[in-house]
Image 1 (cartoon, rainbow, N blue to C red):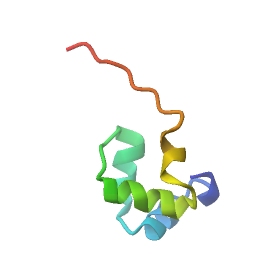
Image 2 (image 1 turned 180 degrees about the vertical axis):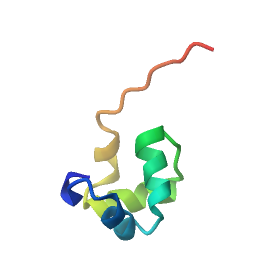
Image 3 (image 1 turned 45 degrees about the horizontal axis):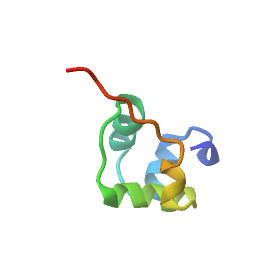
Image 4 (image 1 turned 180 degrees about the horizontal axis):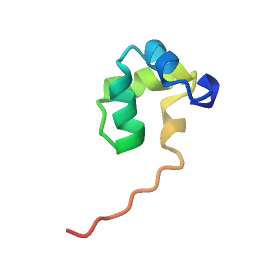
Length: 62
């Protein structure tokens, strides 16, 4: 999102979804569809794998 200088509204227009969706994903760890994942990568002008390369998955205790 650095490209959009934190402007979520401008980013959501480029992605093609509403601002609430982006807010839920980034602020509340909401899940997303693969379709939206690819749209986000496209809006950022990066390959989708770049969004995943530093992802760390932690196991939650239930």
